[in-house]
Image (cartoon, rainbow, N blue to C red):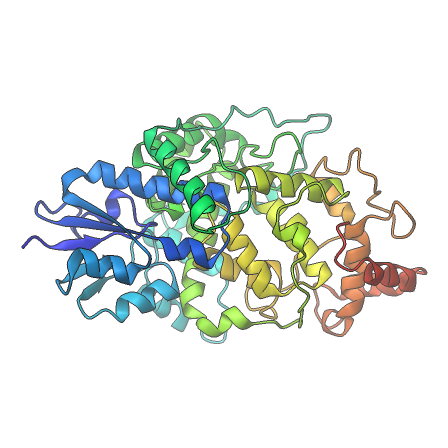
Length: 501
């Protein structure tokens, strides 16, 4: 009997079907299981459900007769139907739930994870060497670049600095409504997409499976061919303009020069090393500046590797961290992606982007969506679940450290040394979202008081005992003491409750 290898829906690239030596075994057969229970458990963004199912079905079509595609209520049911008790292998899944499932199945052999540059054992050995030190992203980033020789000049980083982030914090160009970058690669839908859309319609109509957000046309790659085309288009046409303005936000240009490759990486359609090598080659050829290449490399082999490994290293208990004791529920208008509810232009604009596409870049995620949730004191577990469900690139391993740790500071500072939140001044400086808004970023009181400015000072007041002892926030707390209207600001924030700002 030919060996059978199980491919989860985020293990769809050739590096998941190759042998350890890199070739494709001739007699192996492939199993893909589409579990309906996955979509019953959570209300995913419909564009995300469409993308995942389209990618799985495209991969099965590519593998042809050597693949068996099973639709079932659960993975366990699908595996039993396809294999009985026959042996099957699988690469280490990307979620704790899936890892526990395959570990419980005696006929399944689990191989090491793929799709990442730093394996579990390597990370554990690296972490053990950090005795007495925090597990800093910058240190892992340096380790990864040294190990793989990425953007290196001998034993030194290219340009003499590991991190060029300070060169990549420019506000948007003054007087411009777009960055002027060439448009991103967009795929063309095919009959597989039409089939997926018909199935999703039927699930909603007949099976009580519900989604949020809007679906279509598909904006992100669902096949290896499309993902490679997207990578080539980004490096050739968009990477050069990425670096300086990677933290800037423009209402009419939500994609700016961002790569839009996160969903392809997280579906396993692209391998991280091939992505960073393409960026490095473009820099060495003189086609892109170093700060753009390094900024992209840092996203892929810096933060992505850090988050992936922390997900496993910190354990299941990390999911329940709530250092700030925030317990307010996510309000319905936010949960339903009701972009018409908020009057604050920044929040309405970003929420509409998520509703319509299932994507927005990292600064709107952190400093508009996440910051608002943090200021309002929403339950970090519920916020994490929302991000997981509503973003096309959202997976448990992605969102747990990003939201619990970075966005909501629920781990008390294990990942970041200060909370990522701000008043309206930051949004005003880094975006054009304040233009035409009914609120004024500098106003703390009155009808035009910016909800982010009010929320920021109220957040500092609520947790001042914690922040006044933190060197990175102590100055802000002293600023709170200088506000003559502090009590009025705090009262206004409390009275606002969970109403859309």
